[in-house]
Image (cartoon, rainbow, N blue to C red; front, side, top):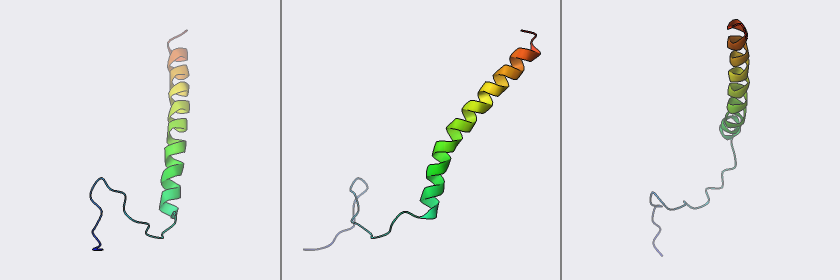
Length: 54
């Protein structure tokens, strides 16, 4: 059987490489960023509401 490279929509064969530190950092950023952005938006809303006098 002739070996062919995987196409753009095919899953490539197992490379034997496990998760790297880069993968862990990207996953951490994807989890942490929305949380931090939500907290910053809430705090900014509270600061703006109090500056408005309400």
